[in-house]
Length: 353
Image 1 (cartoon, rainbow, N blue to C red):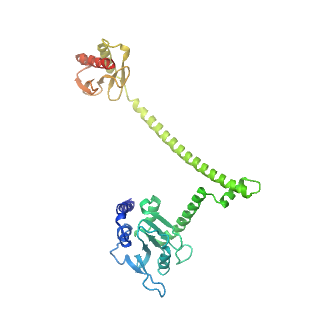
Image 2: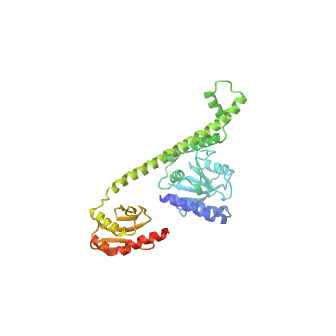
Image 3: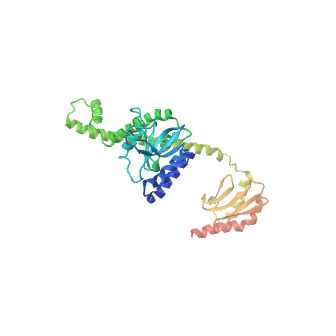
């Protein structure tokens, strides 16, 4: 996805440059403006991106938000930027004031790395205290890229984002609660299970025990679920491999040992029996060649016959076991190379000694 690649490029740039960025202004130009561009907005067009947008509140004049993005002459997103070294936790109150005096439904608080998107789900024209979308652009996940893409100029639709914001925000909060309970079960959470499984009186001591039991049971359940998923994945992979083996087997059936190959083998045996017991001379047929081996060992090739093509070859091996193909008119020509074949036997006999 082109947009995802642009976001990754911004993340890579941040990792490369952040230690050289000292000020808030540098943060805006190096980190925030590239994201605005990636979202399809032209920062050089004052009808789309307005820097230092005036957001006066009552008698308090001169209040300005760093950027406002416009669509059809209406601000659709206001952006407050901080130095990348600053935490964002202490700055949402400032954005809260700006949000109240503009017509926008969305605001963004960022230090160029952390991004927090807000809207007014809980009370109209009053920015929620908690963001509905939050991410670290250097560690952004695929689903977060998908949500960010909804703010792209070509996709932006207020109703779509607002309708989805509720689900995003509360799902995020629920996941956070679940994570906290998994790490450290609360009294109320543990009591929920204790009421279901314990028939006695839930004294303080009983509840202390149950908090530990709930923690243990949660960890075991998660481990079992993970193991089940892994086992299922491994079984699926095993089935896939078995299927691949089954699919390969018909290929093996294509190997047909011809009478000519067997006759050639008998000629080779007749030559090599001068130095070898015939029981040590074996053959293996493949789709590419008919191999003759010592002791049925692939590492001890004696020669190969290539007889299933227009041009026939006898393959003999040098001392490095590199095959040398010799053109032959018929299998009777094998007799012409009996010394080379016997030399190969001598090589193995000498090598074993």
